[in-house]
Length: 389
Image (cartoon, rainbow, N blue to C red; front, side, top):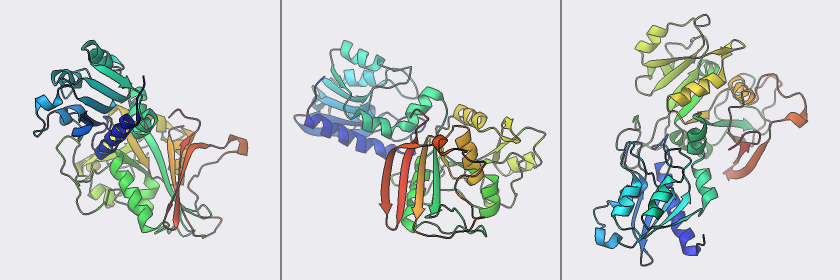
């Protein structure tokens, strides 16, 4: 179906609105909506938080928009309107009820409960529907949702910060700070957008991190179920991979587990040496996983986290955990921050440990490369070529 430049502009506006839901709507998609009549935007909306109204309903029920002005209007929405009863009523119902004449959809919803049915309902009601505008941009915006709805496994971004010579710490273990302040701020933004953050027990013992989001001054430990105030910051679920449950009780992770949701992924009973009951009394959730080669099986961990509704993970592990995720084919994307510093040292760690690749022809390769300069640092982003994204 044909569309014009104005259609693209309105859809781009809907995409910008959708981005406002980043970090708050998971495991739902980010969706934006624009309502146009007589070549002017008369209402806008987006999916604001998990469990709240969808973008279309938010746009069509604003107090300053009367029903008469909506009659005959065109609605632009980034994702196919839902047609089933979930936490909210079907969006197709209110679109028909309000007398919308035309609906422009960016991307079809792969959710089996929708998957083209929403468009069919609208067309059967006499509404003109156009699809496929800015589709690639919307797929990238909702890469987390698109993977999770198809596989029920989290989308994983491996984030690392290294020196120009590929080191994540000096030979003494010192790593503060490799990158500049702007880069670190960007990492906290990424933390706010991902549902969980993963680190290994080695990182906890060596760095004693908080693994929280420290953006601005307004912070919240919401459950993604409540209405969120403008400017609030989502705190990721902290997931520590600790086969033996040897995490120190005095670590910041344990001491703040009642403030920030914390999951400890442990191995089977034979491996566990820590006091699980005591950890639970401090607010730590225990997730028992299968083991592989004496460590938590990463694939089993992904399946279990997905079953808990966790759709996205920021992997901020050390070299061993990063290697384990890569070897298990559980990384979708890499974000590598590179600082113009050289520290050397044959015993200084690199981002990826383990045995490594034997032949260069077998190296893990990235595609869809993006390179951004952040003051003195470089950020290289790319998708793992061997995976479908």
